[in-house]
Structures are given as C-alpha cells and as structure tokens.
Image (cartoon, rainbow, N blue to C red; front, side, top):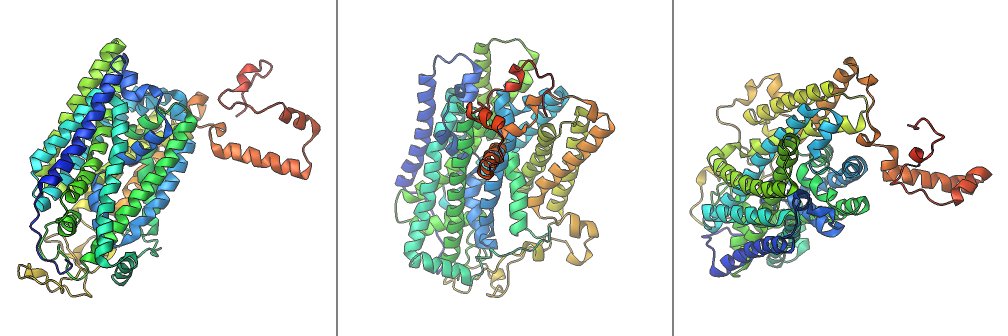
Length: 613
C-alpha cells in the first residue's frame, strides 16, 4: 500500500447504506422533536430549546459546531505537510474556555438574551447592533457555503461519490431538521454526529496502526520524517505555525467563536442554569481535545503510510485535502461500509456546522431585524423562525454552488472568517470590560479594526508569504512503484522540500510591506482586528466624553461574576482564619450562612445609599 499504486476509488453498496443511515438518523431527530414539541407556541422555545437543556448534550453540540468537515479532512493533511505543531491548539482551547466562562458567559446569561447582538444595543446603540448583525450574517453564510462544498469536492474526486447529489442531500436534510425541530433537534443531532466523527477517525487510525505494525512504528516514522516538530518557540510573527502563533492567535480566533458567536452563545445560554452552562463549556473541552488528538494522529498515520511515496507530489490527487479520502479508499477499500463511515464522519462535521449556522441565522434575523420593528404575536414569530430556517438553508446550498465557481478563493474566505471575527470580538470586549466605552468609540473602533484586518487578510492572499516562513516539510516519491507519475515532481529527493510560489512572483523584488505586513501569519489576523478595535475604541470614547457615562452594572462584568473572585475570597478567609487575624465581628457574620450570589444584598439594604464598586 505504501508503494503507492493508484487507487481507483468507488463507493460500494454498503458505503451508500452507511451514508444514507447517517442522513436518515439526523432527519429522524428533527421529526421526533417536531412531534414532541408540536404544542410549542413561542419562537423562544424554537430558537432556544425553552432554556431547559442540560450540560452534556450542549457540550457535545458545542464541540460539533465548529469541528466541521474541514477539521476531518484538512487537519490530518496539515500535519502531513507541516508537522504536528497544530497539537498546541489544545492550549488555546483551554484558555478560550476559561475566558468565555469567566468574562462573556456571566453577562450574556444574566441578560437572558436570544441574540448576542441585542447586547450591543443595550450597551451602545441600535446602529452598533445592526452593524454587528450584518457582519455576522455575511460571515456565516460565506463560511457555511464552504463548509458544505469543500468536503463534497474532496470526497467526490477520490471516492467517485456524486458531487451535487451529496451537496443537495446534506443541505436538504440539514434544513429539514432545523426547520422542524429547532434548537433541540440541532443539539441532539450534534451529539449523534460527534459520535460518527470519532468513529470515522478511529476506523482509519486502527487500520493504519495494524498495517504499519503498531503505534510506536507510526511515531518513529513521524519522528524520522520531522513531523513531531513541537519544540518550535520562534517568536517571529511572520512564521506560519509556531508555538506562539498557535497559542496566541488560536486563542483569539476561538474566543471570537465561543465568546461571542451567536451559534455557540445561543447553545450555552439555553442551559437551565449558569452552573450547567459553565459545565457544558468544560465538558466540551474534552470533546475538542479528543477530536484534535484524533486528527493529529490521523495525520501521523497518513505520513507513516505514504512516507516513501507521496500521492500528492506524484500527481495521484490534485489537492492536499484529498489525502485523507485517498488513504481511506486505499486501506479501507476492501471493507465495505468503512469508507462510507469515514465519508459520514466528514459529512457529520458539515451537517453539525451548517445546522448551527442556520439556527443562529434564524435567531439573529428574528431578534435583530424583525422583532424591534414590528408587533407580531409569538405564534407568528415561531412560524417566521421556521420559514427563515428554510430560507437560510437554501441560501447556504446556493453559497456552496458559488464556492464551486470561486475555486482558489476558498482559503481567502476562511481567513475572512478570522478577519470579521476579530473586530467583532473587540466590539464585545469594549462593551463588557470597558465601562467608559461609548457608542462613538465602539463604531469607529470596529470599523478601524475591520479595515486593517481586511487589508492584511486580502494582502496576504495576493502576496503569499515566502516559503521559508511557511516551511513545508519534505515529501518523497522515491518509493513509488508505478509508471503514471507526474515526472515534473520526481526531482524532489528526500532532502528537498516541496515549495510552491505564486506564478510570476519574483521573491527578490518584494517590497517591505509584502515582506513584513502581508507575510504575517494568518493566525494573527484575528488578534490584530481585536486589538485595533479596542485601542481605537478606547481613544475615541475618552476623547468624546466617555468617562462621563454611567453604564448599568448588569451590562458589564462584575467581580462577583467570576469563579476566580469566589476562589480568592474563599482562600483569603481560610488564610485569615488560620493566622488568627479574623476579628470577632467578622467571625460572627461569617457563621450566619453563605450569601446566594444570584441576589445582590446591597439592593435590599435600605441604609446603604451608594453601591460599592
């Protein structure tokens, strides 16, 4: 197999059965919840699951939402070409969950809002809310089209599965259960789809381990091929992936998803208590790390199998994203049903992301663009929500059709996801953490952040970074034992790396702007947007009288909202008690009982006239 004979992939009957089963199961969940909740009257029930969900399904749903087919297909290919340094994303996941549960979750949960952009109107003004909503809608539709199209293309070219058949069937099933079952259906299908994704990865990993003679053999091959390049602490921001770009850049990107993205916030706010919401974030961390571990190890398996004959350089596949499907058809082709399981895993990734997006788009449109301007009964709003789910589902399928025409713009649009997310994160950070930020500062800040991050994002796409900053690792075709090689690439011996540059781009004639600003690692697009939005926002707010404004305390983060504060007071009392410095009056107060932090005792005490900060 590692000899690299061309794989003539085609789906067997068993594979189609497994794939169809996955779609039928997903649709069945939608029908079940449409039947169980047929009496639900309000749009809040449809969009928020009646705020009665528990931590476990919500946490798995959070995991599934942004672990799309791009994760299943691109992460292993990334490890194959650049090494396993993306494993450091685990650190950015941990930091993201801490920041989200301590800073963003308490404020959103306390306000009990359906759309995160409602917060922008409460804190700033309606114009800021509309800007945030429009940015979110554009970003989500673009991203969703790609999430449907990218895997369909990769799988179609390798497995021979019909491209438009797969596209339309996934789009239709997804729209079907979102429209019928609302958030509950989305959450429970996500739980099922996480299971399918892990099963698909495990099928590939177990077969590779058996073929290569054990886990140790795979790790040893990866070590010799330079794939275990974890210890790269180069602080150069132009380098594509190092420890710093992944942990710092990755943290900003994931906070912009977990902290403020409607699709994620809508889920944890639908939990029945803030404790359950926090718990769902931390359980979701386990899911994220297991999928990351599987995808990194699948990449190492990919390298171990093809270490002496790279199918991409040899011209057997046309893009790195097809490496995983190629491996599946190569090593699992003789086991009917297993290639179908892997394809189901890739499509489950797509379905879960698209369904979250459709439900979030419907929620944002109802809450931000319809409710404030009309007087409609809740029953009608519920019907409108269902209609919108249908409309956005069709829009996303249409967007997938557009993605098929765009070709090379795919990478650019995925970068734009970070480019739009960064300034939006900055906008919410201004609102929650900066009491003196005003609406002028917020609008000027978010526009500045957007302009700068778009500038660097589009510039980086037109002028790609030089190869020494990307550092692809060597790929070898010396062990290929067939005659259909694309011989232009056989000059690649074991010591040389596979390098591509943009046609007609002379590396020596690059300007300072191209060499530094446009060569910045794409992981830093999001932090740049956030930092510029916050800095400009603060300066403009202070210059336009921001320090005079009084903000309602419920709209900003209070120290009592965080677990860190409660931990600090608990430890402080323990230390004081141990050193005997606790005076008698304080001691007597302490023994009366614990304060319930959900209530503010200051408001009940009429003798106090000022609220302590």
